[in-house]
Length: 154
Image 1 (tube, one colour):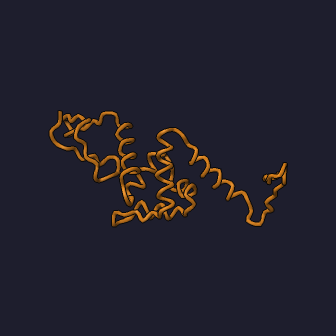
Image 2 (spheres, one colour; image 1 turned 60 degrees about the vertical axis):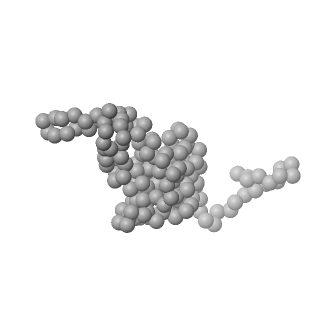
Image 3 (cartoon, rainbow, N blue to C red; image 1 turned 30 degrees about the vertical axis):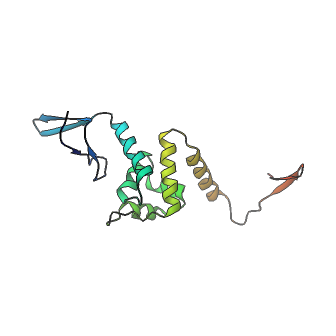
């Protein structure tokens, strides 16, 4: 059992400390630390970030994005923002990401669905993003009445 906290910075977050769940070994190159169940640890970190944090930091936005295996450009598309916005959030110098309310909430929900392997929100956002690229703004939206109800028509 380890008596001291281990500051785990390899995840990209400066403030993650482990009480246990790791092994320290001396090697000919110095100290080596082995984390037990790394995937489970990252999941716990992500859950804590999305459930228990106020304003996200840039490092936390980057952590969540990387955990979902999304490049900046794809996250930007899904959130409906410019890639430079994601880049700016992640590289904020003051620690705060300045990610706006709707994008912050969607990012948190995307992560929750990602770890549960339910990608409904992600799928919806991806479909909307694709449709927004394909549909022309002046395209005629067609509807037809059927049995007293209006439906989108092909």
